[in-house]
Length: 226
Image (cartoon, rainbow, N blue to C red):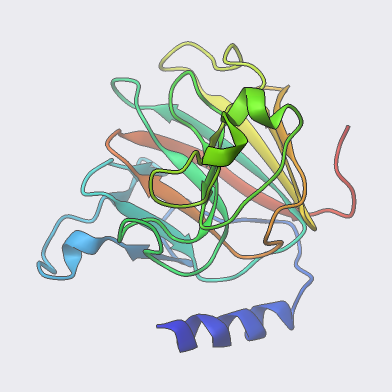
């Protein structure tokens, strides 16, 4: 598995430029692969990632991730999403690499949180990132960390950026070198620097709640928006 990802990294980074594209073709999950631990022993376990009415849907359970086959660097990702039923939890993982690195479930990455009322939080998953006011937004420095029971959550700048339930939210994530910047519905909600990784796969979560996606557009960037 480690050799596979090492080879994938070399191949992808050798083609570091890419044209603007959609990561979802509206028909199937081409360009993605599923990593759901429950499928290891029960291959007939339901796939929590489906295509329905032209939308990519995370059913929420069983828990796992939908991961791009390719690795990306220096890009803007625009995601339109909404919770299909009750509000809940999901996330977009950037710079993902080693699968199941945390709790036998989460790939090594930086998560951009989509959980209702917390959209735009960062969660450090075996990788790290720095933001202004770190103590206020992350807690006591002696408890910071990237695994286990360490303080991995970095709160966003505002929890008032999401639209009412049932309406579509637009999340824009810009990753440039060691910086990650996030907007939700046009409001800047997080900005981090000194990220410990600057490229990787992109992943969507199945984390307990049904979420619909109708836009997953990617374009290369050379500078962060203001």
